[in-house]
Image (cartoon, rainbow, N blue to C red):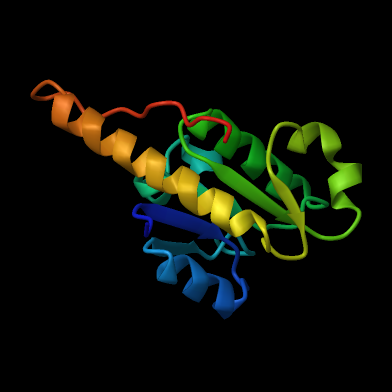
Length: 151
């Protein structure tokens, strides 16, 4: 079964092949170029981000040795809770250095690799749950999100 749903990939330099793989699995991929010298993360700075709101799942690939990137990951976790799956890709050693921040999240070193199939399935379920909620939403009330299972 092919997936559906939108995946937000937070990484200015993600490998093109992984975007292609996510798209082949039936997902729309939107890219966040991440913060730089002139841009900050709207989720961190303003408490809201249209890209995060549109995402049914997130691949987070920023350098966790950077304090601002760690702050971003905390904000993503707070915003998404257990309603949208997130997979974190770290540089070698960061999975140990930042184990407390990464606790409970699927983590890959270097590239998403074998976590791709699991993320795809979870995003498909999250997108379906969002669709059901939007169908059930009362007029004038925005659709919500349902928790994503750990499978």
